[in-house]
Length: 201
Image (cartoon, rainbow, N blue to C red; front, side, top):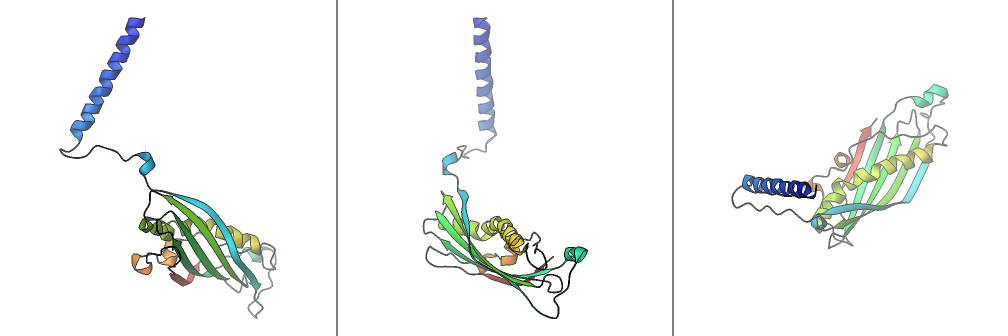
């Protein structure tokens, strides 16, 4: 039994060695076969989000409806304006992203005006300031938006005209996150793209 187990382990070692040789021979001549150590790969983390300003105002106008029952469930569009401000540490270790939204739903259905400012904090490891800034302008807004939707939904739930539900949207497109619209922003300075007058239903 012991002899049989030794033969099996020896056979497994030979199989592993052959597989390794096959991988090495498949690589182009002169190409490096070393893989990047896991602890050296760029990583990002979402740390915290806080609300710094929230205003929900009921608009009194001739357009304000008298809604009852199913009328509150009518579909409507919302006009959304967004301002983004990013602060990135010189070493790329962290980013603070401030998003300010102005939301005006269809006044015939939801006569509100809503202003909301949130600040998200993100960390990075093994990243440059440029990599962190790219993450902050492309990925971070999308991470914050579900929380923004929830805050607006919750803050209008007890309003006269019912809660305002924002449909999912492409935050990168809304903020126009092309390289020409953003610039590198070290800690203490800021980059402020704006996107106004965007409709979503």
